[in-house]
Length: 637
Image (cartoon, one colour):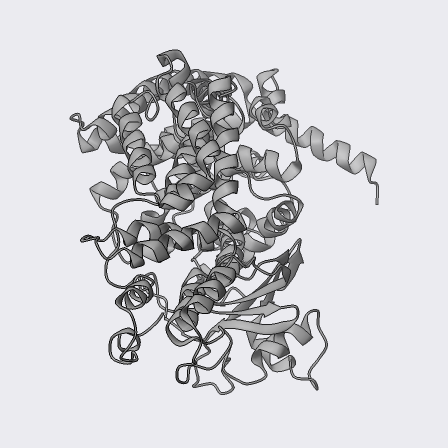
């Protein structure tokens, strides 16, 4: 942005005060306005219309009143020219908004994803029309006219220019341009008479009228769409090499040295050389005692688009892959250190600053290996789906909330014990994840909670069988060789048999090394249920009853935490596992439907072959033995 002395000390003596006022109104460093730009308010209302829960949002009269006040205030502070330019779409939007906020409760409590009434769809349509008018070339130019008019009106005694300048800034941003650079260009044109691309040296004797016209033309210029590729440099030793969809992961320690013309060939080598040939970006260690700026690179092809916010868009794509992978398989989160932008295959903006990651374990090689395996397992399918279509809004919102819920308990926060506040936050955040996924599947939230609850008994059984195995393998005792043998088979990357068959076949060995005598009877019962459907059914009956109690308690706890009613921490902690099961299950099923291109609602009614067989009376061990026999019969080799 411009520097203060450029507008206070270096003006020619005959410069009119209104010109100084116009230029200084483009400086955004001296405090903003509490008046929100109309573009921001309309976007917020449309976001609420799509994402906000009916009972918690639109049915609440205070929320409707707040949105109405924000809209009225934004309209009141519009400049005269912009108000006239958008008069028709603005009037339609205001009328549609009033119809919604005055709708009966039966409409206002409709959940996201099922809002098909005309009062919802009409507001969405006229809202998009209004934003289109605000984003148009002429819409931006008339905002500039209003800013000029405000500067020329020397009778004004307040900061009337600020809401107009804020609106203009957001209009420029929404058009795919770098608003800060455009405002800097306007200072150059208005204050010095220079073209935006000229070096900042001295004034040019350009009449003020021509400067205003030039600035008006410049602010209304459309962003150039061209091939955009972003290279992101991360710290974190998740060394992997994969490519799917628009995203490619490369080991920086190998790729950067080989980007030189004499290095080994690899895909996108020329692009990387364009960025690193001058030595300032993506530095990697050459000697043992040196430290690399980045450990691995991610290339994101954004296609033909505008350069503004390109790095942020690329980061969001990669973060989606990281969020889902780490949520499903664990690991430590890589740290974004640098980025480089290519516009039409030529180097554009770059960020050379390296900020070191904090928190977690120092040099967490194991966490990095978990991350690499998670990305290799889940990344390709997610990246391919992202290349097919953008992540749906409700899924994106659900992932964002789930990441917030996971963060206090992640490896990145391993050096810090989760607080009571962290644990309390899980319940409402998990609830919100399910709400978003319900909207994505066009299901009522209560219906989705019910479908997820039906999955609880079998999932709880599987989890308890795993717990029983882990109790046996705690170590100690004098049978180290057998414990090592069991552990290797259980955690083998390429197991010889499904893990439930491992339990069925080696339950005697597992019990023989168990040293927790108080749990022996329960562990024996869990192992028996793998091969005995009667034992399994008895356990499931107990889990069904348990699920009903937990669901009722979860609802009470969620409402207490949201509305400030009393709830003991022990009560909160008792439903944390169940709440995490609901949110994780909903998110995984929603993602699976998106990746596979299925109707979301259908995925929530599907059952695994294992569960279907066990509901029909077959035991788990019998099911997997039959499955393996069928596979061997169909593939004799």
